[in-house]
Image (tube, rainbow over all chains, first blue to last red; front, side, top):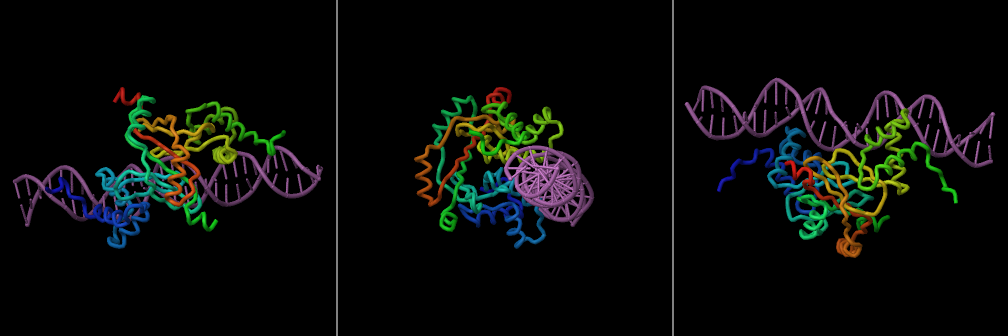
Length: 133
Length: 133
DNA sequence: AATGGAAATGAAATCCATTTTCACTTAGGC
DNA sequence: GCCTAAGTGAAAATGGATTTCATTTCCATT
């Protein structure tokens, strides 16, 4: 079947760049801008932001906002996971961890709210910084 | 014993405002600025930022950075917990939840990193918004 | 092909939280 | 009192993200 609305060419380029980065890779809008620009020199930063928002709505990419990082980052959509941020070098890594649904349900009931999403971030020192510092 | 360095008067005021807000209450720097200004009209926003940083270093207040919120928030230091943010009205609530230390240890070992802190945020709809929306 | 409306685009302006700069004042040890 | 370090506030700078707006592209329909 054909997609109901094909992705605009520029948005597809943005998606490609994020996808090619791969799982576990995180790019900021500026980084994405630079990479897309290599293939489409005229494109503007505005379009990158708009494209990322659209792609997020469509579920193609995920936005992560990691405390301590100075910009949001994007990653290809994939299985839910947590993130680790090295407070020394700023590196962000994926961490295989999810709070199980029944725990969320219990918390939601307990607090009288509806939980739709979880964001888990760990902070510390990555192996590289532990070795060198 | 006397504290090694007494807290500057303005920083103490900032601390008071955050403390009086109480557990489960979250204030942005601007909100704190407004409240401190009621008692110390001449104080500048710069001092608020500097004071909050110092108070955080001293362990008197905690900074929380919740994805989706447009400013950082501060709360009195207390037992570790998670946060819930209503994506509809922006309200932030405390949630009694911590990832246990042995889980963190296992993850840290598995990923070859040193985990010093955890930040857990849930997103969804608060009771008020569920009722009205 | 022509047309019309919706979506996409980029440059520039704007927004806004936070940080930096800098000249000045305050506090406390001597 | 003096001196140095710390604290202070106004204003400017920073920088990521958003908005505005005039223009262009796309595409379904003639």
